[in-house]
Length: 155
Image (cartoon, rainbow, N blue to C red; front, side, top):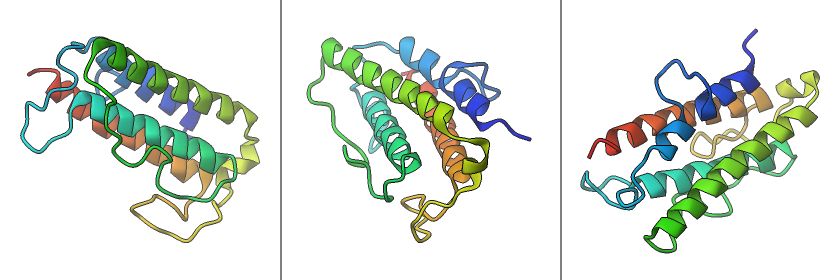
């Protein structure tokens, strides 16, 4: 059976099959470029990381029994400012949210992975799924945006 905890670890900071993991991409990003928009109408690296953090925090809340909603920070939060200090804070929040998620995994019993989240299906919110499907969706989300970060880092 697929080990979702291991898969998230790979996507976040492990040996991801798709290429560099999310954290290694972010640690190698140029702090002066993470706020730029080299592709018109596309998000910056900093905006993508804020988005990833927001949704990681939302998944933590759902795994803790809270109802599905848009993330508390919003779907696409904006950086407070465009500085190296802000980038380091954004990066630290991303790390902490992923470490907290891994801690939540440690509290889940094997039988809880198939528990349904008590919400109707809403594809945009990713609700109406079980815990395993929710985490699998977050892993896919990390991989998808890692590809965007890798591309934006080339500019």
